Structures are given as structure tokens and as C-alpha cells.
Image 1: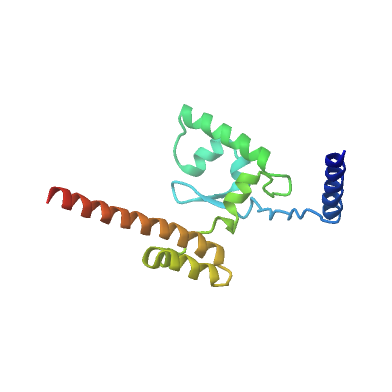
Image 2: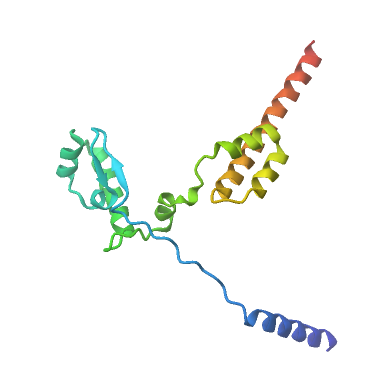
Length: 167
């Protein structure tokens, strides 16, 4: 009986503690498909929205060459995916596609990478404590640089051990 009472009291405490909290789901930034420009092989460019709705003959004309059978199948499949991923107002609704075209991918940051490679774990801490608008990219690339740093150290240790064994 005491165990049930304690269990009910714990559940009530958890329920009361979480009753006032709200989950924050930020509204994702939707990218407009008309602003994404895809380069074509002959130097022309086309927007992602137009690419999803262009006919095969118009695409061949834009590219400047004929499309073979396998390319036609791939083109139709890609256009089908794009059509379902782009809304009428031009915003990309597919989460994976939207993430690919937002700035959340943290492009290469040479300073963070150098911090990780040359300073190791200290460089990662330095990258973490620098606060500016490129912090996430710097921290990500400092971690990657640190992994490269560890890989270099392992290669050097392996080379030393190999030379000691064979030398």
C-alpha cells in the first residue's frame, strides 16, 4: 500500500511540474524555390520551381542536348518529388530539401578546422567559447579538425611503433 501511495505522489509531482511547461517547436524557415538557381551544363541556369514543372523538350532545349531513356526516367522521378515538395506559393515544404538549402548546414569554417587540427581539444574549447554568428560552424569544424588531429597522432604513433619493430 505504501508503494502505491508513493508512486501516485511521484506521478502527481511529475504531472504538476510538467503541466505548466510548453514545448517550443520553432517554425522552420521555408526557402522559396524561385530563389534557388540550378546551373545547367551549357552555362544557362534555371530556378528549382521552374525545373520541377518544365517539360522534357524544354529541358533538352535549355541544356542543349538530347536526354536518353535513363535520364528521362530520372528526370520524371525527380520532377515528381520536386512537385510534391514545393507548394503553390513557391516555398519548399519537404523538410530534407528545405534543410539542404538553408544556412543551417554550417559550411566549412577554416578557422575552426585549424583550431581543431593544430590545438586539439584546446582548440575545440576555444571555438566553443567564441561567440559570434558563425559559432555553430566554427564549433562543428573544430570538432572535425580535432578528429583529424587524433588521426594524425595515431598515424605518427603507428609509424614510430613500426620503425621500432622493424628497425
